[in-house]
Picture: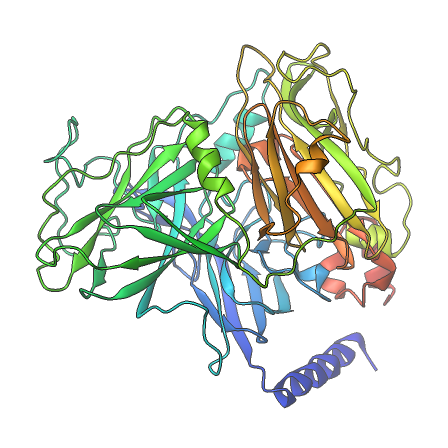
Length: 573
């Protein structure tokens, strides 16, 4: 029987098995292409799917299988899509990470992603090749409970907000600048987008704030016109929020309305009320909003920059009580975004996030611990980010094929450093500013419990330490705690939260601080763990984890048609 017939029989059998258990197979055809759009009222080349920017929203139920045929209609570059927050249990090849879980999809080729969504929550998808996320390759992915189950909170309706930042400089030009000597930094974004819409050359709130921009005046359904949230009085709404920003950390607020946080990264949390919410790149939340204000007014929804000195105007839309016209502007200024460097405020919000009662709690002990020092360094005149003084450069052959087939000379077999010098001063510029490139792998035994300590430090020159949101593929982890200064082994563990630790897939490390994570290596595969800030990953801020590779099932041949694994595909392995 030929390979194509074998694959057909396998997928047919798998489909019948799924249908026998009542699950649905949801089919999508995604064409990735460049197009001309006006995301912030100015015309740009944007990367989108099926002529849409952002890409189509995927909506599924727990237990469904997503079958997505992704065709690369870019004429000069490869592409892949990562399904952010989906653990890919039994389908590690579908994670959508170029050079890690699959080969890049070449121009004109179609790759078939097929995976199960096993938990409810707010997720999204985005490009994971080069800096295609910065070019606009992203969309929402919502997983609902089965129809016979209910959420642990009540709401009457819901909205979905996908937040992003936007540059007028193309992602290709940004990549070249980041890879230049000396470094040409990308700068701050020109605009912030809500569901792919923002305003660069006008302001929705010009009448209410001191600005040189003219008042926006939209006519005829312009692409950049804000999507207004239409609500009924005395109702409760679920607002799903996801940040796919390339650089910016954000703050969201709605005038006069409290937000009740109930979900983070697809996991329920103990509900708590806030006036506004910080959200870092790669994070998702659900908040509940009750429309209990004056129904004869409309109210601003604002997005502003946090964690970096902002040079980007707020993104604005508003909440429209249907009792009055949506054309009536709010009567007061938009909420003021908190100071960008008020990190104590950021920490206070983050530390309020604890797990909902009944959430699985972390094992009391770990089998091993790795400490990852995050620094900015040099290779010659090139600026890089490094972890334990190694700047990640991905190999030509995907790790999943190299490890499964035990190939030699496809990546650095020397294990990467598991810690950093005990006398390293995180408050000073690095004594040795130089680093090296590498692509070694941290290998864990299947079902080992692993502690990861993320340690922040001073930048290469001058004084300063940045916020970094770190995302783990293939797993959720427990956030055991945050700390100031340098982590103290044997001391700081005593204060770990082992009773209400939240489950997340993305966690932030604050300036000059550390964050402690614990996860169980129970998902056979090869997984990226990296800063979710696009240029930082491009400059080497990431590591690779592998576990139980011998337990990985048959990898679809089309995932391995590059590098040293290509001959295995050609020989029918």
